[in-house]
Length: 388
Image (cartoon, rainbow, N blue to C red):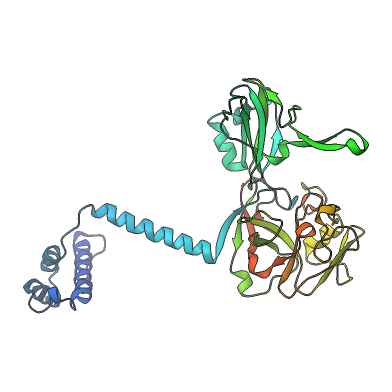
């Protein structure tokens, strides 16, 4: 008999179907258990009610055979939460994983955690609570003003996130709370002359690590800019081999000269079996200058990739005798590196400021984690979207 939709009769008919389905599933799931066998009268009645299509009787018997558990709503939400977390973890492990750019080694293609120094009197309303949280959500920029909580010595401890842990330590060993500032807050400078020349680092206001500061003294004021967040594609290399130009994420575990237990992001410039060298600011592979893909050509030619970006600086040898390992690193122009059958060479797009394979050698294939997919946050920047 036809039932008009959205009527009481239609709702009752739908409810009866749901109850009958639940009864059928309960019987299939429990009929093999001894306590629900032929000796169980309620189970026998449930079968009969299901055969007769008696929804009311089925609902009554189901309530007796499988009474509601305490905190039923909480149990259902817990089940949903566990399943959701499991799916998210599996998705992250096998498909896509979020990754934050910690340093500026891939500039101007990708930006790591960095700073914009601003005096306290120059801040706008958008840099005050609560508006600053909205600004951070859209742009990744958060205004911070750090002052010494008490008198003491200024100390800096590097982290693996592109920050310095800035603290004040007094004469009794008391330490202030952590004040995380991007590494570019400390600017390099040189002192002395000839054999006495040395390099040091100072805050924009001239304060240096080890200087004494007084309670309430301004240490640093400005915008802490969060590095780009991107997705790591973990499945693509299952269907094709890694290629030159891929922005690769790899584990540092087992690579001598790198902090262990973390991950780096660089551009793949060399693949197994190739011979690499640098001459005249250009990367040469097997004696030829690669010009593909597009980003490699732009780096080689010192071009811009976007009107808001500055030109690439090309490729340079590391120039530091401490990192001269013949056949593994590129210390001066003309040094050659022959890659093994399972080795890849990784170089940052920001060659003058990238600690990469030119310093510590090739990346083993077992360390490769995935290829950078696209920047998904911050939203308002010209790097948002797929990475080339």
